[in-house]
Length: 69
Image (cartoon, rainbow, N blue to C red; front, side):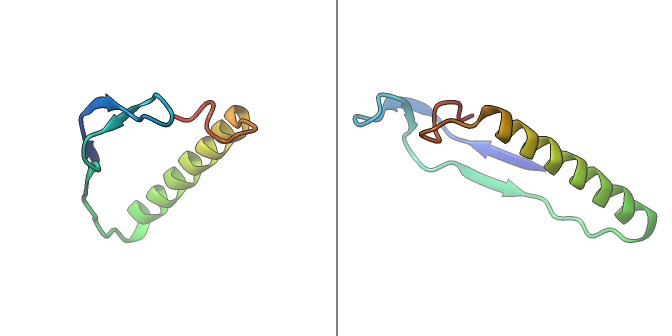
């Protein structure tokens, strides 16, 4: 499970975009799996990575930031 926490309260003077006051905190939970559960997890991770790659290809911009999430 991934959780990002951060408050966006100020604007970056250079870009005018909202910027976090502090770097976000990342919390990760790591679980080791084996056997059929590992195979299912590998397939799910491959599917998700493929979807992200497709999204990036569809939403890329010349400057690299126009459609950034």
